[in-house]
Length: 250
Ligand code: G3P
Ligand code: MG
Image (tube, rainbow, N blue to C red; front, side):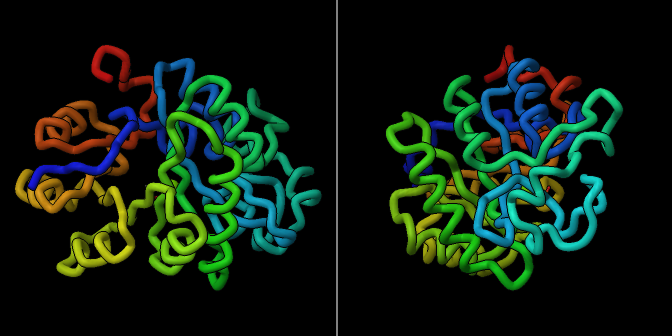
């Protein structure tokens, strides 16, 4: 059976917002993606202490901001004072940690499709899945292309599914495992997001024959990206948004 689920998403996806061209998980990253021709961005969402969904990859602040400790320990007002750009390069000094709301507003205004990775603070999987899903449903209400939600955490995805049955979900995994298709069916997912090294032509065909779209991460070699597309991969998630031009191929 070929894939049949709705998939309104572009093939080329900027990883963590703007890949390596701008600080990850910032609006500056999204703008870099758009100005380089990308029509979709993947980014990571977690909750502040007071329940605001913000973009942040790590559980802790040190690598990508001038803050310290667990990101989930700070209120949004505290997170909003941090510099999330200097770590990348001086040009981005002062770039703030964005809310999911701000990113939704920008993405809707410019027609950027979004893959919202639910990246819970450890221990907060369920509440993060619920809150990110509810906020996505509200922020993208009435939009032609709703965001695709994905997570490594099945618990977060279960909570998202329960909160918002209408949203498209995908399982992220770094390992192609035997129970994968059963989990995709159980959560009524549209897609699986696999570490690209786990993919073979046969695995891509098998997943698509089972009815699921395949997204691959993180591909920074143009030749490898084209190979995966030849195998039928539906989405290529890349950091190399300048070196890999999506325009002639989307
Ligand atoms: O969504 C795929 C990819 O982003 C997963 O890895 O660590 O960059 O969030 P990570
Ligand atoms: Mg991610």
